[in-house]
Figure 1 (cartoon, one colour):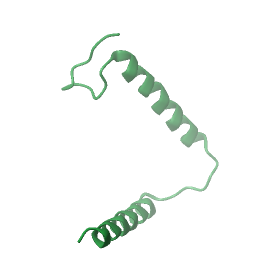
Figure 2: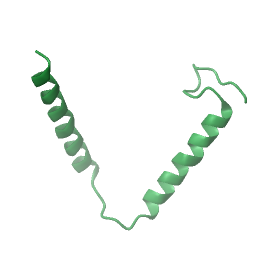
Figure 3: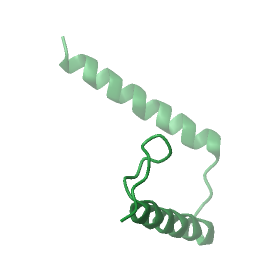
Length: 64
């Protein structure tokens, strides 16, 4: 197992980085081949902003 520098990679070994790269490329290929409905960047960002705000609100309600 070849070690990687923490300054250069979030992975500790080359094998981990290569496995992640294969996984990521497969996810991208599957997404690009998907026939599902397209979602705009703006719609995704609005949905995520609302989710984050709801989580913040819920956390503030439980933390006095």
